[in-house]
Image (cartoon, rainbow, N blue to C red; front, side, top):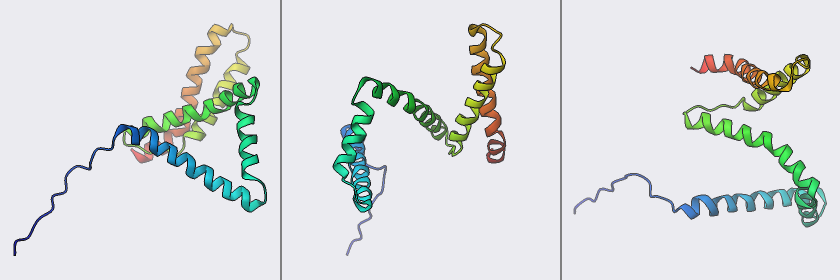
Length: 144
């Protein structure tokens, strides 16, 4: 009896529509379902909670502005994690770096108010980079 050997090669390619459309959609549905279960367990109506969520995020012109305002930090934090991840690193302290960078910007903006805005803006950007890098220096040194 002849033995057959199974060769394992590279994993099969997933179609782009699955990777870009189906998987995020299934993730969104799963998150909404689990959140709905939690809301139902608490004793509220999940459909009404979803209506309030959508209205609060997109229901009137100011809501769209607030949604963009509050999501900007999350978007840039996610981009920072993605850049580190593509380099083969896992950066779990990005939220702290963003917070400390904001502190650096605030300090420069408050203490350099005697300068014109065109001089303060580059100094604020540089201070944000210095404060964020300083916050990540010790873990980065230990990891490297």
